[in-house]
Amino acid sequence: MPMIAPRSPSAKKPAPSALPLVRGRALSIGGADAVAETTRGSSWSAPAGPVVGLDGPRKKSIAPELLATARAKHASVAAYARLVCQLLALGAPARVVDKTQRAMGDQLRHATMAFGLLASCGEPLQPRPLPEAAAPMPTGEALAPAVLRDVIHHGCVTETLTAHWAARRADVHASMEIREYYNQLAEDGARHAALAFETLTWLLADAPSLAPLAAAQVAALEASDLPDMKAVVLPLFEAALRPPAPNT
Ligand SMILES: [Fe+2]
Image (cartoon, rainbow, N blue to C red; front, top):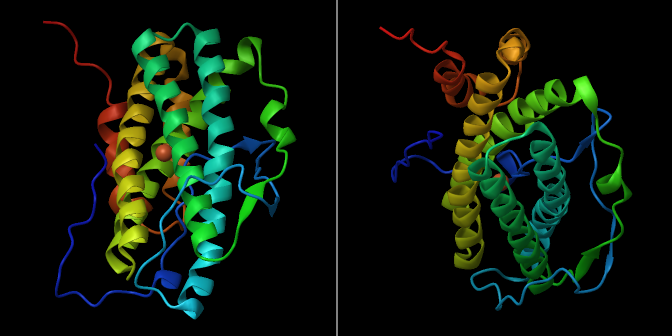
């Protein structure tokens, strides 16, 4: 399971605006992360009670963070839906496909919760169409390397950071409803990160020829300037990429 930074009650807490946004698995099409535009409406809003503990200006100030999270989580539904099809195409075991479709359901719940909280903060919005959700997928020999890259960058890395950053955001928000939302993201994100590493392990066992590509992708991450990459994410790859011990 990904490591979550221990919380110190005495540590000075940063402002939410100083923390990285929580995005979850991205819908990456042609190297760019796709998200839907939004319009006024409630078709993606889960019923949410009033956001207690925030006055009008603070609700207004938290709206951009909730909107970014809601749009990212909405796109993440498509990312997991596409991954289910790709895993089936590669012959993945039922346990991996099942956890992946459950993760898709989690993302839908996260998106509707975020749109619901956003409405409670005075911004009733819903996503517009997301045509990238139906973009062509890699096929044939290109599929397994594409899934490997996606699982490393948008599963192992992004979901681990989602869990880590959501836990930190839960720590700094004044509203109990917002804290509960981020705690949910942290809990589910940790499970999704564990799934990504499980998927990576299966991919490498099923197609050992992918090992050099995996090693190169992880080596490239060492140059990343993403916060927490070195301390939180990279150590998790060591076990996943370690060659299996020879049978004795
Ligand atoms: Fe997730």
